[in-house]
Image 1 (cartoon, rainbow, N blue to C red):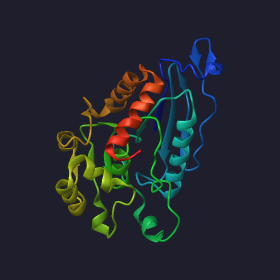
Image 2: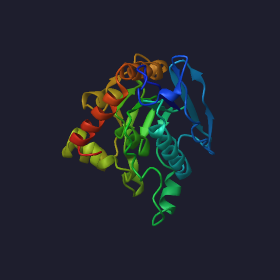
Image 3: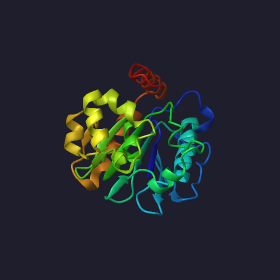
Length: 244
């Protein structure tokens, strides 16, 4: 699921998109082939929901779909914040299909490996397991709200692989070399409380059922501000972090 939030302050650079004081989307987002998608208009927000049809693991096709969706999001002038989450309460994302990953060595990079370097903030509402590539998605988000049931980890070492979608350097930047080495080399899972204590996430939701609602509330705090101010501030933060 991806929630797209519109800015409350309407951008002065797009007056042609104003309609009775309300912004309307300039174009429709990509329609993913391997997921179901709905895009309701709910006042100040646009929503897109995607649910994987083959469990909690993400095939490479879904990576490219996500890449296309967020490329569209960055270029859509009426949208400012995106929220990513999983379907249900079991898993945010349990990573790439490992059988497919092992058989794809030497092939062109997937959408996950072509790391997103967008200009707008993306928030994660982690509703359950965020393992492997799922944890790497979180590490590339700007803010994270986690369910009390959420767990995080990089289990790739158990099957002779490694976190190849940019998660390792991001993890080192956040928690430092010793802890990043421990988590990545042992593959152990972190609870939401451990992740919060280490500064990996922003907050834990009051309940598993309110994680998306609370993430939307956080996104709305962002959309109260100037869109241009948010974008350039994010750019400055990313440059300070060593990643544009």
